Length: 242
Ligand code: F6R
Image 1: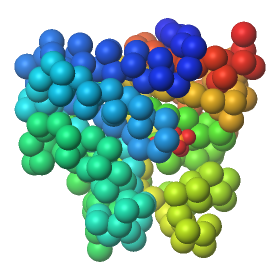
Image 2 (image 1 turned 60 degrees about the horizontal axis):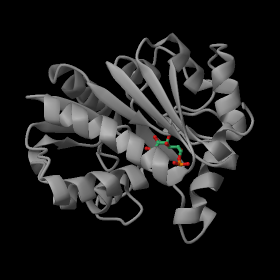
Image 3 (image 1 turned 90 degrees about the vertical axis):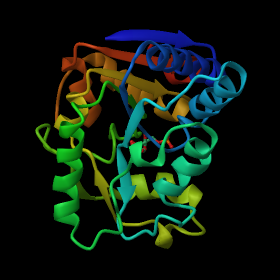
Image 4 (image 1 turned 90 degrees about the horizontal axis):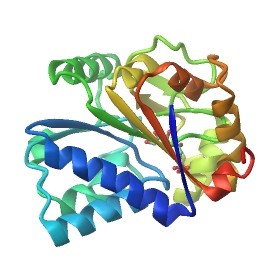
């Protein structure tokens, strides 16, 4: 596991963007796994800026997002479909047909999970997966206690996760209780993983991850087993470790 230490959120975002841009430029075909939330917003801003300045093309890139809330329309401003559209996809030249997110509004959620998993495999898997981390160690929406062998599935969101995400909603009651997420085994099948960690609130999670003990009680700990993980963390997130 490689650890890149950055001074702040801006530098973390730039370093992550540079790694992705280089991969996208080098490849004839590239499958990128993406996350939502506050952490990757700066990364996406840098990718957009780079496309404006250097015309980096995403025509050969396919994306798979980690997760989506259940029961939410894609047009809902709180959906991850909407987030990705506004934070990144509307501003780069990626063909819409190459963008994939779990359909949280599917009528048969079980079937949707199977199809999503199959689609990832049919594409030859994910070349590089971007991850954030929850304060309780979740990756995607795989909450503590999730099987490390899990594939794409429907999850009940932990109360702490709903509280953490309530900042995006008018009130906590409106935060969905379920989501579809790539499973832990889906995530670790990615050839390369970039984990971004920023801010004091993530200090304990990062410390626990770096202790190296793998356990279902701390889903991100599985990353210790992966052979190509780069953690890009800022000073605040690292304050418990340094
Ligand atoms: C979102 C996701 C989550 C977030 C995590 C951290 O697609 O996969 O695991 O990465 O909840 O969220 P932020 O970045 O908002 O602190």
